[in-house]
Length: 469
Image 1: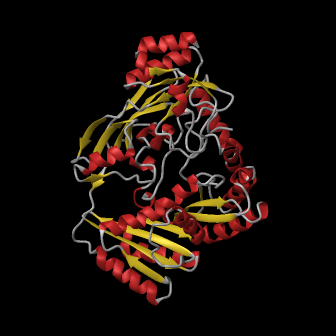
Image 2 (image 1 turned 90 degrees about the vertical axis):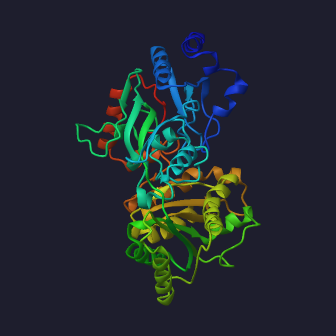
Image 3 (image 1 turned 30 degrees about the horizontal axis):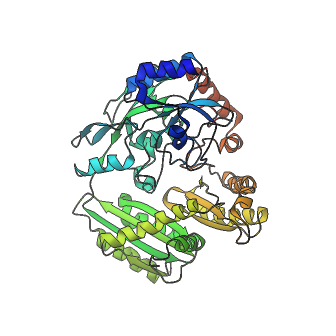
């Protein structure tokens, strides 16, 4: 260990390597697992070259490397695996926006650039970036790409994978694979970048990327609707697609139980419908063209849905402040869940038509396993991703409900998989879903993943203990 730290300091500089207990305390975990395995040191490189140097030093000593972005992950991907002794490689000093091209609508950024900083830089050129989620203020681009992040706008723009044109990656032996071409068309052989997007740092370390930008919207409309069933939610979604087409950017659903939990943590907030309906939908559309009359489209959609008894009530945001209040309510659901000990956060997706059956069957399954627990689902109807979160029974302490998490999670996942769904829609596998991945994927699929891991990382030093069972 002494040789490792000495070599790293000589190569990267003394301030790039932290090994004092108090200095590394903030690097021990993420939102899913606050404290993991042993950390030898924290490395903070300033460039891709320094990342490559650090990896070479670690590879020579067979030292595991846990890559770290903003620490906002919900699968334990940035937490050193228990039973392993690793260094944490933080990208906090690699925050540069290397280039921004408003003509080609591309931006080249380093892995440590936060999602929020990228969006601000794009806005200065009247451009937007297609990823939007609750961790935008602190999550880093490298982490978003490594987990193939989703969020609120997947319906319109797709997952993180769809935003990437080029990638720069440091391999497990320290070689640099640099394909930072700003090309939308490039059929020159295997598209290797997709191997590393979503691999959670287990195959290589993403250090920079060329990303797609889009024109800034000049018109936007946002509305809340109250509905009595998920069947009617899907009817509204179908009509919204027909009325708004590809201008629809978000279609979010919130259950009564999830909102009730939110109001307990935001007592000062104003409830939009008085008593919470069974289901509340937050819908948004925008356009970069001044010729598309979004206001009329929303009015016609709302009027038709009300007349046909698809929705019980609705309100269109009359100002930017009201729009932000709608979104604060939606984002507040996840925050409230994180703040309560024992609340189970989950991340399944099923085919969109199967969502009502999924919610019914998952609710029945979890109450059989943990009688009295409170299902509080919410999520992204437009891409099938329902966060089927579960609150502890009112008379049970959070720490006691935590002991039931494994059985409750397994019950939810079994329902999702039986409906053709997934155990992880947007949060990744990390540490906490490895066993679930093994149940979901075939032996042939897992075997091919393991073969790829062995080829690219024969010593097993890249984010050890993650993803693969």
